[in-house]
Length: 312
Image (cartoon, rainbow, N blue to C red):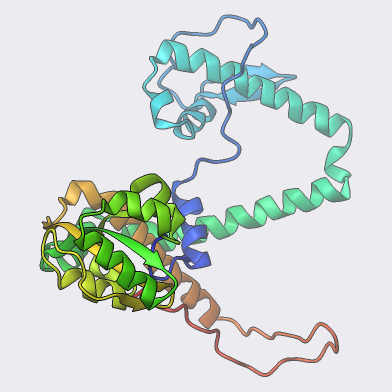
């Protein structure tokens, strides 16, 4: 059991942003498990992006198509030598083109479900292109550095506590636990026997690991952070979960992380911020009317509720 009061849900726009700006395209060709024999391809692409590397029923596949496919490959696959990547992608692009031709021949683009999916893909591509144009210019090294200075380097180091606990339902039970511990009973064994926090008790003897003050509910944190290393709470600590008997195993100062270690985290935070700004910009330029689905009448204007900020 982790007694956190921090907000855990991310804004929907942040999730969209992560997908838009970091996920590979669904159109990216995947390596074939067992490719059929293909005609030999050049070991490396020519320099001209317009150069034709294959045709399928006369439809061209160019060096630029191959380069786009390389850009959609996972990083680890891009490390393969060109004489491996290039022929593989030409074969896969040819396979894709053959599938497209077969699908058009069968008239699948006229199917309502397929047309709906194609329209949705086109709409998503347009939205993603606009969001990328609005957001990407902000994801600079200078922005990352400024965020790091403000949110990491510019803040004092936080204290952390390593503690374990035994959770029981009543104060009388907690007093009995304290009495047994003072008499020399083993904390971990007692936790496994009586603690209602089975998540920590059964596997870890009540050990909660290292945590910062804001990671736990106030009553628990206030007590734990007021204690010294090796100390066991002399009185039960009451919370909405019951009564805790806490032992502090150690304390430390959490070091300020290096810029390199949090760059990815900072980038995601910046993406979330600038996507929210971009969405606000887009919605401010249009008139949005919402309707009651039962009556069909317009609903009164109301500002969308802001997401609750995470507790610091």
